[in-house]
Length: 192
Image (cartoon, rainbow, N blue to C red):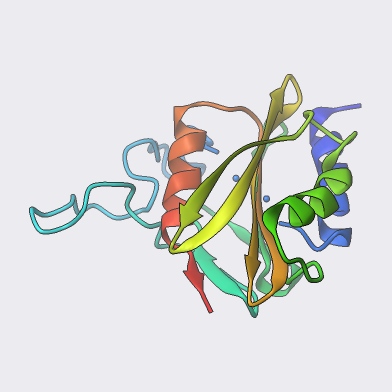
């Protein structure tokens, strides 16, 4: 089975589970330029008064009742699921997805939330496991990750307003650009 079909199956499982899922396509499809320099799509560098860290993405907005975020500007993203997902299809080997979930039920702690989300991700791509927890704009989130020959999955699981939600990234590979896009997108996240 081609890896694109495998990832499409994973995306369907994520959609059915209410979950969500993007990487550097290399040269931009329209102009031949690379997006490797600034995944946010902006050109400004941090001023002396700004904190160091990834620049928030400034492109297309994905939004749910719990959070919103931006995708990297300068790429031909296609919106899906009523504004909850973005897809970038450069070619059969460069297909990127970012999904923002609505809310996956209620949970009192991240362990319970992760236990509910993990089964929806297994068997359809890389083996996904919880790798760490981190603070994301003041909310503690669990990080899930997996990489193999079929691609790269990175996701966050959060509890916001008592509801479980996810942001899922499905990329064709793990590399520095994939990590830069993830951090840029997550830097743009705003909790509602």
